[in-house]
Every structure is written in C-alpha cells, then in structure tokens.
Length: 320
Image 1 (cartoon, rainbow, N blue to C red):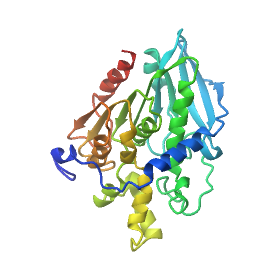
Image 2: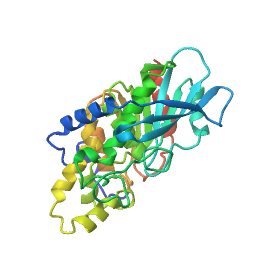
Image 3: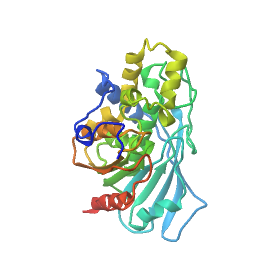
Image 4: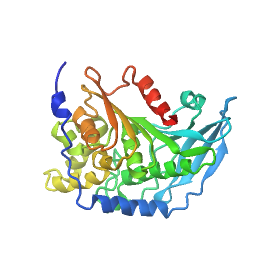
C-alpha cells in the first residue's frame, strides 16, 4: 500500500489542524436560535412515483434566510410509529431516485432524502452574500459576516429537517438516524451535532472536515479546489491565511463532532485523495459518543465493498 498521508497509528491519534474559533459554541447556539425562529411552512405533496407498500411525497420547508428546501419523504403503509432515516447526498449532487431508498422503507423506516440548497436538486439558494460566489459553496460568504457562510445554512437545514421528521405523527422521535457519503457524510455528522436526539449516524469518508490539513497536503483540488481558487483570486500572498482558515473553522465538522450524542459508524479509504484519511480521522477522533470506523487500506474516494451491509445492520439496531 502506498502512503501519502499519516501512518494508520498516527491517524488513530490525530484530532485536526484547522483552527476552531474561540466563539465556536456561541456561534452555533446563535445559529440554532435563528433556525428555531423560522416558521418552516411545511408542505407535503404526493409524488408521481408510488409503490404498493409505501407513500411517496415531495416535502418542502422554509429554512433560514427564507430558502425553500426540498426533500423526498417516503413512509411505509404500516400502523404505529416508525423509525426514520434521513439521507444526505454528495457535493453538487441531489437526493437521487426514489427506488434506491426502498430497502429501508421495506424494513419499516420512514426515509427522507434532502436536496442541499443551491446544488443539484430542487432546494433554493437565495444568495445575498458579499464577495465571491464562484465555483463552490465552502467559500460562499467567506468575505461576509460569518453568520452568512452558506454551509452554516446547509448544516442548519439538516437539523431543521431532522426536527420536522421527528415531529411527524408516524415517526418515533427516539428512533431517528442519519447517513450519507462524502458531503453527505459531513452533513450526517453536522446534523447529529446540531440535533442531539439523532440516535444513529453513518458517515462515509466525510467531506467538510479539517480544511487546513487538506491545504497542507496540497490536496485543495477536486471538491476542495475552491479553496485554492479563493487564495489565488482574493489573497494571493496569503496575508489572511490564518483568518481564512479560522473562518472556515465555523463550518468544519471535526469541530462540531464533539457535540454528537448518538452512535456513529464511519468508513475511510486510506488512498482517498479527495477527502484525505487524516481529515476523516480528525472528525472521528473528536467524537465522544460510542463509535466505530472501518478502514479500507486500498480504497480511495469511492463506495467501500461490504460497507453498505454493515451500515444497514447498524441502522437496524435502532429498533433494539
């Protein structure tokens, strides 16, 4: 096996490089207060896609700053309260097809899949920030007030959606899990950090973790390319480098991870040059709750063979 990051033993001890702002906790409490002040104006509309054993809906709600957020909502046609699973997608993608969610519905779960605002699905990005909006969401709002960072709003969307799902009459609020790969893995961690009632978290090679480490590894390319673009265009001599990475620290999931209360299952590929192993372990090692990580030495940024089965068994434990 080649090595471009730390040896595995070092990875198991590493907790991150990117700064955590001094007012980090106050920042997120202020953000959550803003989220709770929003009238979500929930709308459920039956989808044209239907199956005999479940009901499929398009769910819309209003998130912070007035954006209408879309999610697919599928509930099984069974009596009583169900566990629920909320799914998050990879960077720039969308909530995907209806059919690939039906395995968990068949297992008795209400399944919800969110479109991240401003990406490939139906959720809105209402914009309105000062500064650069070119080629990426990590840097959106970086030259504005820190309360205007776009991923702050997206993280809040995940927590708000979790609260909406928990309040649905058919859902048992004490049996709700979250999952996703890459950006979806980062959003799963963020959601569980901001909504402490989340019981189960599956995070596959999460994005949005330990930005400075990505930079130090010279891997601010691919999904992280916008960080390089930002410096080239707006701080070419890196005079504000510490300020930039400190601001990014507000939306760094390794800084949020300490807040998670639920059980966590993660996976990492040691050849992943999109979301490097050290950034994944930085998030994992900051989690204080019950956790496990599956290591794939020869895998990069890709689905991990066998992990889907492990993840399903882990999620199904929510019923025990």
